[in-house]
Image (cartoon, rainbow, N blue to C red; front, side):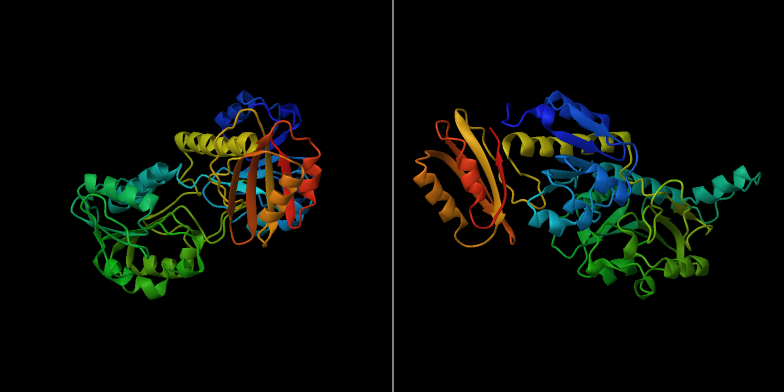
Length: 408
């Protein structure tokens, strides 16, 4: 796709070792100014680096604050090559017409497989047995070791990951029950619980797959642990703040929780060079991993392809599908036209003003697309190629305009 703005002028900055397939996609699309950095940048470093950058790619460790965005004078889009976007000042991106894309589903299989591995590790107490052998202790015993088959697995949050865990667990012969605040159709023979308390009381193994919301904070705390079966196995690969680590520590020490696994924590080191501190360290039959649920080669490649493709679609065609900030529009490519992109505040009269302008310039509109969210609107105009380029400057003067781009 030939855009009006030369592709060799577009600057792309990719941080935190984003997968090589993503880099290859940008190169194959004709973009040449691609800078890749293996690690996250500090806020001060990113504030300096982001000036004149058009596309920014990050993972979970890079913070994109309001102050950083204030220095991003040419930024068109941010790609979060991960699931979450908590590290990005989303309101500022929305207000400034910066599209934010992520990959909410690309690593679901990797997380689901980790959960299945953790279930077996904890039921068989493999972590403790492994540690003992490394210390030279031969403890050949079946005591407190159990099969997964026949156990009841309770899944809190039956979304993309929870439902995949459900299918894999049933294949191992587990009975699956689940609870979700939104009614969900079961897969296989899984059964929905009316309340979370009902699930906690029945489950031999409980795994959490909920988003990070005020309503999910401290879901795994003393109040709820009291309702669980004694000797339950518990897994948290969802969000660190759903669990109260001190309450979990006490429950493990008391034997109420017989096995615990976590991939997410209340406080996580900002880099690999910093120490990890948690009350969960050193506890028996406690399996801890450093936020690697989605860190497989397959998942990272899928995420790279997914986010890079969305960013390229937005850059090359104006299609904003998958954006969390700019309203989503799926656009056909119109040959023989000029395509103009107009992002504006969602206030009355903008579309009318644009159409009045087009009429005054005798511009023949061959296609017009509009979508809005609570704060901004996104209009895409396909107009006759005979229309003069001065219309861009006139569009910028429309009241409420945030961004105007002449795509091709």
